[in-house]
Image (cartoon, rainbow, N blue to C red; front, side):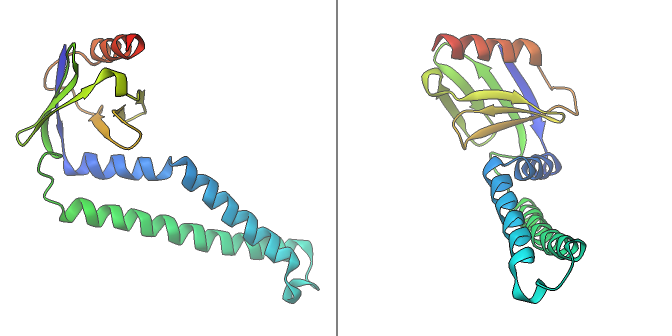
Length: 166
């Protein structure tokens, strides 16, 4: 069972931004930063005489500025990486094949095998199928265009069957 798909620079950019916004440790960090600003707005001597509404608005402005700047900076870094990288082996046609040995990925530049016992998980979002070979190695299958070859539902079912028995 195999699928073939094309990964474009725009797909890669979109996928990386989606992962940036869905990164749980980052969300926890942003919530902690927000909590810090909220607490300091209420405990700063300069705000001691201000009313509660002022303190909340003050903290809100700080949170929006810092968190917004962080997210904008992250997105700009992703855009710069996607525009400047050559993308050999990442962009272009990908073939993923389920075999007895593992998941085999083939591009114009490489062929690799990811053995079933080490396999992590498969998830699906609105725009992508995410095949996590490890915690940090992910195959991204864009879902907005039809596959070049294969049936996605059957392919995912085959992976799930293999990983459950591994």
